[in-house]
Every structure is written in C-alpha cells, then in structure tokens.
Length: 205
Image 1 (spheres, rainbow, N blue to C red):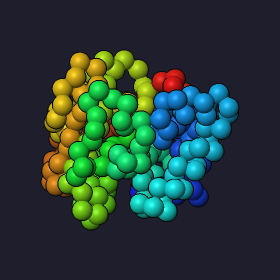
Image 2: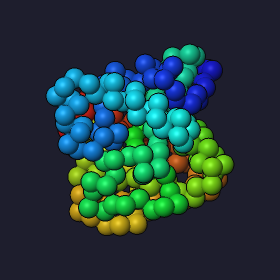
Image 3: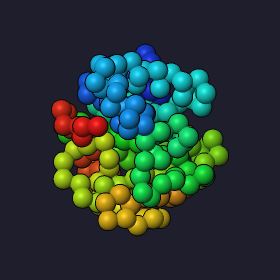
Image 4: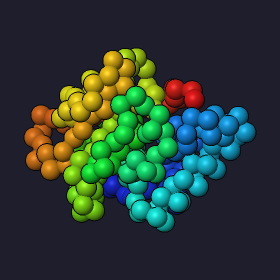
C-alpha cells in the first residue's frame, strides 16, 4: 500500500471531501461565514483563505493519499489566521501553539495507522517552524460529525485540557509528545480523525 502525505495547496484542494472544500466555518468569522454561504461564495472564500495563508505563513494542511486516492486531510494554522478561533468562550489559543482546525480520514481507511502518521507529520512540520504545541477547541457535547473535534477523542489521543468549559473546552497537545507515541495510540487517533467529518454532515453556520 503506497501512502503519501502531501502539503495542501490550491492544486490539490479539490481532493478534499466536497463539503469541506466550501466549508468556511474556521476560515471566516461567524457573520462573514454566514454571508458567504448565503451568497454562494463559500468555495471561493475557502480558496482565497488557503492562498493567503500559503503566501504569508506557508503550508497549512496535509492531504493523505493511499495508492494515489485521497483518503483524508488535516488543516491547521496559527490562530491569527483563524477568525472563528476568537468566537469561543475559552479563547484565545496560546501564542506558542498552532490551532488544529479540523481533520478527517475516510471510514474505509481508519485503523491503518494513517491518523498517527498524519499527526506526526504535522508535529514535525510545526516543530521545525518553532512551535511547541497544537491546541484545539473541543466539543464536549459532540453528537454527530461537524467542524469541531469531539473533546473526548482529543483527550483519548493525548490532548490535555488547558481551559475547562461545559461545551467548548480548549485542549493542548505538546508536539514533542507526538513524536514518541506508541502504537497503542493509533486506534484512538484513527477514531478521532474518522469521527471529525463524514460527508455530508457538517454543522451549519
């Protein structure tokens, strides 16, 4: 099985699941995001956001391919590039951390260690850039696939709560920890990444 993790660019944006290509939950503030959806410009806004972040900061995601078939992705960026990150009661993300925005692995490809490889690849990328951690806003009341990661799954793969909240706790994962994870974490990672977004369900803005 040949598998590759490729930086997300405008050239492979079309390899994301269709609904994710036009989801601007994180990329725009709540008001602008709702306006973009109503105007039918969300896909263009997504492309514009990725282009701007690539030019200014660099790679902000990875696409996972197995035998040249896209099977998953992860999206991340410093909170300054993520307008929605200020809309949570547990904001802001720590200055030494990058925000894990969302991630996904097709159900048929879970349980193969792809989640672990994906997160380790992100960790190496961010360590090289001088960051110490990944932080995410969890959904403590998660019931169905959406743009927010379920808090229980984040905790299961090593994230620690840094700010408690009954609905939206903020969690943190020290990057150096990810580079020494054992295989017993693989299944938990795959459960996390497989539970994030399953087409076509996305939480409406």
